[in-house]
Image 1 (cartoon, rainbow, N blue to C red):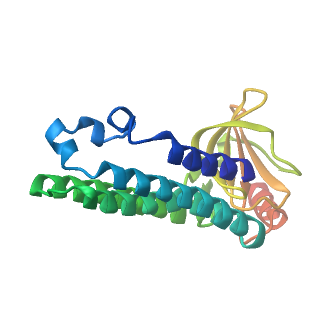
Image 2: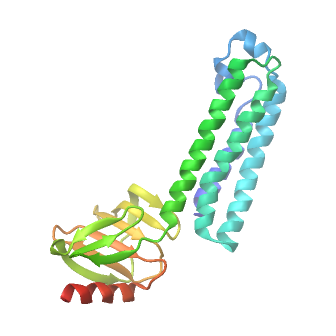
Image 3: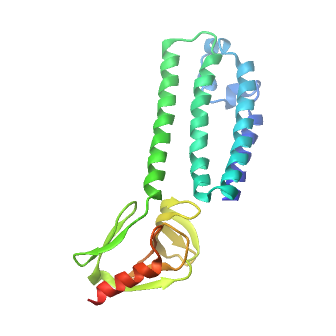
Length: 242
């Protein structure tokens, strides 16, 4: 998690110095599509100063707050902050940037409000996804079926279960195929260093992990946030034996 924090913070700080008044007509999105008349009515000098300060503050504050959250609060909350904070910051950036036009018009204001609306909708979507994915996946056996509810949950017919075991560690994950991943929560489909596609429903990194292997040798790794894996393993194996 520390490496992504350093990379993202560095990107924002570098961006602060990439755009200048001289190259704005080539590099600055929005400004480079304005007509010559619109550019003349835009206070580019003041905007570049704001642009630089904004990205410097964003990069430095992202670095400091993320590291504080990671080391002193919770690594998962650090991941959430890392994803959500820049979106809210850029919503403010879009609103503030509209104020540098010397001659505002209805069309320009509408574009600004649409852009801000899109950013806020994106923030709401990400917040919802985070909330859903952080909820515990509860597991049970109902009507001869293992049911794991919640985000990326699944149903497994007992006839399709080859084995249920406990493992002290997860396979080495090399990439995410389709899923959600924070420091301690990982849900969805991932690739291992052996080229195997596995499903993770990891609500806690506390071992052991429950491994459900299907008859076609597909594996699901599961842990609960609220219950011990040993307790769940005994519940599953006892019900299967009956």
